[in-house]
Structure formats: C-alpha cells, structure tokens
Length: 111
Image (cartoon, rainbow, N blue to C red):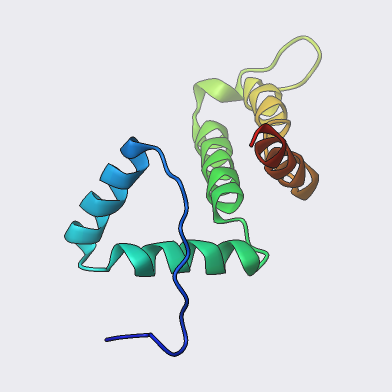
C-alpha cells in the first residue's frame, strides 16, 4: 500500500541498536518499520504514556503479590506489616504525570 499523497518522508537519526531492534520486530510482527514508527509517534501525541502505564501496572501487581504472601503479614513493633512497609516504598517509585513530563524534558534537553 502506498501513501504518497497522505504521508511525507521524514529522516531521523537512531542508534544502530534501535534500528536492528526495529527491523527484527518488524520482521517478526510482519509490520513495516515505517508503520511501527508511525504508531510510536501517534501514541506519543495521543497523550498516553504506555511506558508509565505499564510500569505502574507492574508495581501494582508486585504490591498485590506482596500482600498475598503470608510471611509479609508479619508486623513490626510500630504495628505496620512488612507488606505495608514494602508497598509504601514501591508506591513512591510509581511514575506520575509530572515525572513523565520531567523525563521527556530531560531527554529533549540532552539532544
């Protein structure tokens, strides 16, 4: 399928390792490299941050697993359970929108 009338070429510089990964993924998924790049750009402009969303889902899954573990129910003299202490620490590492914006800004500034 050609997109000569609706799409315009654009050149971008990528590290060779990313190019290799794109080609590998393209071949395995049977999706063109161009389409993969368009999807990545569209996702970014959609205002979604799939990385942050997936990262936070992973942390939430870890918290759920920790709370289900019987040994993690052990309580400290303070009254807090081991699961609560670890969960509170994990929550501090979740990505917030401001952090995502800061990360994007740091990447842009390093260019």
